[in-house]
Image (cartoon, rainbow, N blue to C red; front, side, top):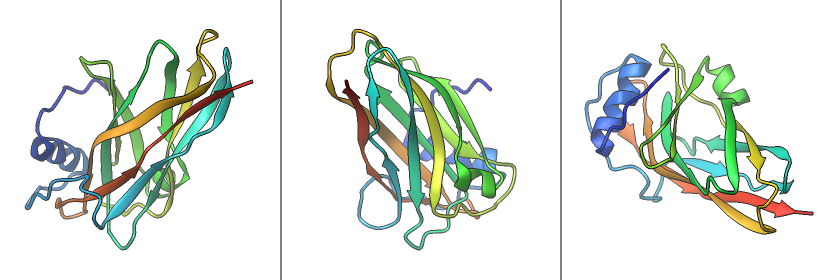
Length: 170
């Protein structure tokens, strides 16, 4: 699936809502980190020249969310995201993961479905990453920017993001 770059948070929420089959009624700017759903990028240790798995987990913290979107930013000279697939929580809610490379090189990731099923706590996205053989040891950022979540009724809601990365080890 090819997606276009959508510039504003409100338009992104409408895109997520449209894919989820709901209508956006109210907008709250996502990512303020006060209260609401949470995404957490885990930080695995992966050796240079090999591949590994990175999971992005979701905690509802009382929010009822039926779709998510975020832009993954990373250094493509050291890290390649080879695949993004639904995690167990996304599969339970009958959601799929769709991706598109944005003009700036970030990877837009949507967790959506043609239903209004609520995401339960757990892994929502599984990433297969490849680490360059020349990647220096240490932590390499993998961040989730412009996070947006939508409720079954189409209301945008806050998403707190706990950033992670890939630790290149021996």
